[in-house]
Image 1 (cartoon, rainbow, N blue to C red):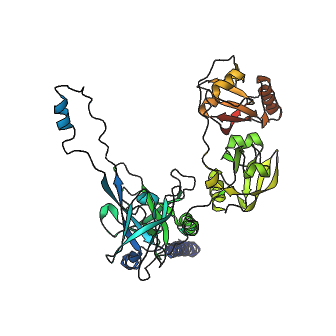
Image 2 (cartoon, one colour; image 1 turned 60 degrees about the vertical axis):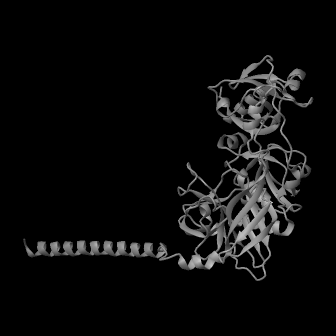
Image 3 (cartoon, rainbow, N blue to C red; image 1 turned 180 degrees about the vertical axis):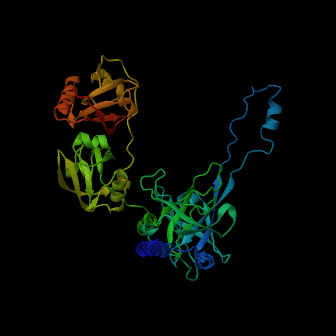
Length: 487
């Protein structure tokens, strides 16, 4: 190898070493950066448990239960078996009411003795006793309850200020954060379990649900107890578990503190909740509905019906898509329900709706939801068999007085009644069934088969793929978009 070749080889080796070293430095730098963003697990939860435990309480409730043994066998008077059944039917004489006990958890939120727990812990209780870590027991009275979020506010009278814990901001809780659950699981007083936030914004069954999912062990008796962050703030109220056997399998749910604190404030001030009420029935905007209406995105809340109330008074119409409420963008129906519920009744708010291809702002003065609730849906009735026409996989019939009577519809009702739906049709797949009434197509009222056919042709002429139908079932409206085949 000549000197020139050796020089080139040495330079190549040096360059390769520099590249490798640079790569190692880059890897080390990335590792150091990663290390700075990942928090180490705490060495112990002992200090936190010692800090918060004095404010956590065990709750024992008792309820008088009527014992009903049910009717015994009927024996004819004078029968030879009469004495036999009288002897063995109830050997101990008439059953007396008995007292039933239940256990739960809670936590003190103020030094003057306000205690938060779950509504289901104290519901229908005759007596409620609060036990503190010190061993002291105090009787509690119910200040107010909110079954919708399963929250109850209690009050105890103590001779000295009580230790308490503050609410934290549950919106700052991130998936993977450490949390601590304290309570009374299975009667094992003042137990502590640690875990992480497994998921956020879980919805179980209620309109106002906002649950934090955690793998911290939660069992029966933990209900109403607090879920703490690492600074000792309450970020959730332990409410439910998902379990096939009734025990903890690492899937527990705590109502987020930002929901709970608002409910508690109202219970403390009024003894009841006072949620805002807009007065509309709504559904989510699906991609096919958005396409049918000319919306750029499948967002917002589609108004299906406007009964008498604040929205009707303000001029909101069925078919409007609510895109903003009180300055906050509306993502879907769930977000709108929570926004309205969090707004005080009587407040005037600006509601932005998408109507006939453009946006407009409407000023609405909210009513109170608790006052407005209680309407009942109309019961279904059996169908007659009127003549029908096949459209979009459905057998349709125009409304007659006879059909209105059979469906228990108001005399002035207009539209097309569905008498049959093909099971292989898109209409069946999207939930349309016999007995449903189509009252609008393309956001225009329809009364006859020809009206629907006209709307279909208009949809095709406009180059749209879907036709928006307003369906009413048992008095409840909803919008459904069906695909219209192009000619």
